[in-house]
Image 1 (cartoon, rainbow over the protein chains, first blue to last red):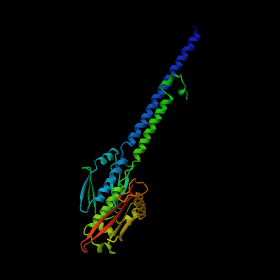
Image 2 (cartoon, rainbow over the protein chains, first blue to last red):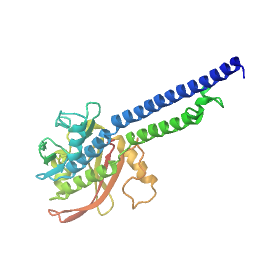
Image 3 (tube, chains in turn yellow, red):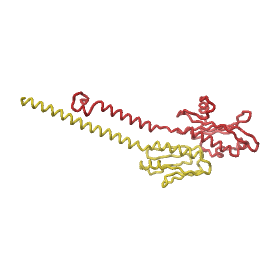
Image 4 (cartoon, chains in turn brown, yellow):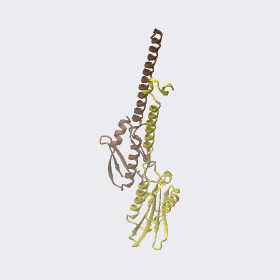
Length: 139
Length: 171
């Protein structure tokens, strides 16, 4: 085999190896980006803040509306407090507006749901007890 | 695009089908998120039922016909109903008393009055009079609960039939 032909064959092999290396690097980078995006999406949406707010908001409305005058009830809000802690949300998770007869439930700065009571809550009381992770409702 | 050409050295790493798999997984994730975040927890039927039964409980306690039909009777104050209910466009109720001859006497109504027609149509369309609660709820229509009961007036020793419609459209 002549020296020139040997050189050509060597260059072709080298080119093939270079292609393999480039595509392997691109493959790893694309995979890393894809897994990163998936991870970010799971972290962003994974807390389920929105669903928890809906579930607990509607529970509070129905419980309060079905309570008779003079009743006291304690509701466990551990899950909601956990979600708020995960979201580093330190404001009040429950804001009761007696003037408009509604309340807002919030477990992160970007979410929040407002619900109306059909019963008059002017004379009712709502106490949040963060130590016990619960809500006390007095009607 | 040279990645997709056959017989290239890098094809065993990057291929058309790899991108297809990524796209399918990505779309699956997006679909899952959308389904999760659009979860519609519909408690309106229960709210309508609680509302109607609350009014019945209140009227049934020491029912007095003369008091209920008087102009001074304030059902919201008497039954602890939200005084701003007519502004909220979330709830509606009406109350009728029915005598032995079947004559209806209007007692009270408040809230989003357009719900009355929505409820009547829905309840009529169900075609089954035993069902007093709307089912297969559409998001844009209120959920309704029609309660039929009886109240006894001790003063006149008379039994009245009472019909209470409660409606809620709280999303």
